[in-house]
Amino acid sequence: MRDDPRPLRTIQAQVVEHLGARIVRGEIAPGAAIPPELTLCATLNVSRTVVREAIRSLSGKGLVAARPRSGTRVRPPEQWNQLDPDVLRWQIDHADAATYLAKLFQLRQAVEPMAAAGAARAGTPEDLARIRAAAEALAAAESDEAWVEADIAFHRAIHVATRNEFFWPIAQMFEVVLRRSFTLAAPGDHRPRAVAEHIGVMEAIAARAPDEAYRAMAALIGHSAGDLKRMYGIEIPGGPVREPV
Image (cartoon, rainbow, N blue to C red; front, side, top):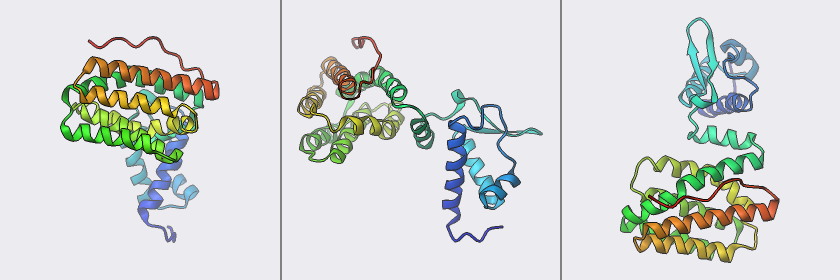
């Protein structure tokens, strides 16, 4: 049915991208059926095998479910795999910056101070070395791109250092969701303060001081929200961060 020279996996990925983005944007609403298999084949000029594999991939991401006699239908957003990198990316691309950042900082305020405290309690010497290396790379960064990569590596290393496998998917998610936030903030004049704050978090973790690490990370996140408000006028809601328990 096709004479496209591209590899099947590439074509399948493009079909997944096409349908997944449409679902997340709301073009195919929850409960609605996706177009029939033969319609997708004709519209996208792909084989039935490609369509079936793409649907299987979307099902694995929690976006769709096949129902007897009613076709493949879009599931409600609360049933989507929100930690899936593609789903996250489609959500980010669809959301306006203010809404996206407000939700992101709610998550960061709830999770990251506790992750820093957990890293102080459980991090291995190898974990601490990775956190220190990322903080040093942040201090040495000369470009916005290097700054963003070092910042992402720093926060990822802290979540891994909790030695709690339930924090690890959040670390993977942050590789996707923090990139946009850090890219917005990278050009600011706040870098010397931010470097000092990251080093403060790192030193508290290395000193095995969970309460201090918690407070240092909470302060870092609060100042990050303030930077975005100052630079772009984006209001990040949120109350005071609770003390660790």
